[in-house]
Length: 467
Image 1: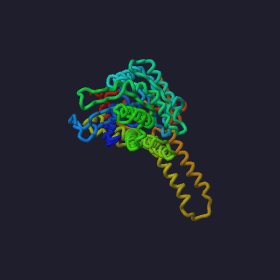
Image 2: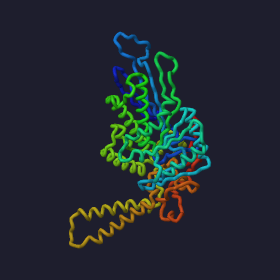
Image 3: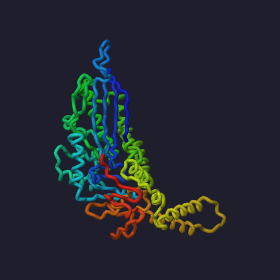
Image 4: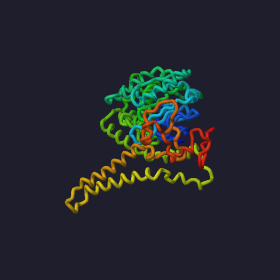
């Protein structure tokens, strides 16, 4: 099992309890933030996680009372939520810019794959409430519109879409306004309830009839805040229903219990974000303390820089590891042809430009720090090296995709150079020729080695999971 687990003792009004949080990450379409987005051709989505919050309540501890069951827990309660990438064919293509190029692919099978995915969720979890937290304008708007268009077209039973503009509702650090979302979903949460099993009965007292499926762009930061709020709402209701706290009371009134609950959700969000995005979750200060602070905003900035560096320069090898461990790519028994995994097939000029930039920077620093042995002006000296440094950096930015750490086992060549119907926010990082609509494939990326939907690639095979 790939996920997280946390269990802590709790105590309210003389009742001993165990508070537990389990997250299970799907092995299908597993990977890293920018190399696994959206849905695949089998109906699996990226970064799919099932999160279960358990509350195990011991029986009353009245002196002289007899235990009516061998089970130390008189009542067991569970509440399940899920998260997953937006189920359309889309991607973000790294180009060394802070915001990658957003790519939406309008393929003929999009509707069928989304239908297969949602029907599978209905068969497993019951009613589906699709909560989308992406922005309604700007960079994220095309993804939101594509999602809504296909959901409306399918119009599936037992599936309801609910849009919540997280950044607009919670702007100016008003993160407490996430309660607006719980108010919107309150009737549905009441209707579908939660799971409850009593030690004195063989059958469950209650069954959860549906789940909330939450997503943002990454299904990390905004999603974790929303899921934590829904979990707090539900556990508050569970405690009231059991008579442990009186009607009208809030979990926040019991600081020790509330603190443990917040910390568990914050740690859970950090673990999922580290596995997918490369750093802890953003906005975790609100999840952990129930307050949004300037210190938390600064820490989010640091985490964003860490994500940028890892996503652009290190995630290729991590994605290869995911593909190998999960069986997406099966190696053959011919290691002699494995040289492409350890050699750099980029053109010599592409490989040499970072060396030129590094040497130019070194010479500039040397000119600024080393003692001078003559009275000649250094103007032309600095002009030379600054010009070389600028030219090198411009070349790297213009040819950005050549400097991204791409996965080598299954390189996303067809996504990078997709030219079919859909939407693309830009065509950066492909050289000057692409500014005139001429997209030239980089041979080193493996355009002849693999294609989406191919059965084999050099040294190995792309296997379809049947389990």
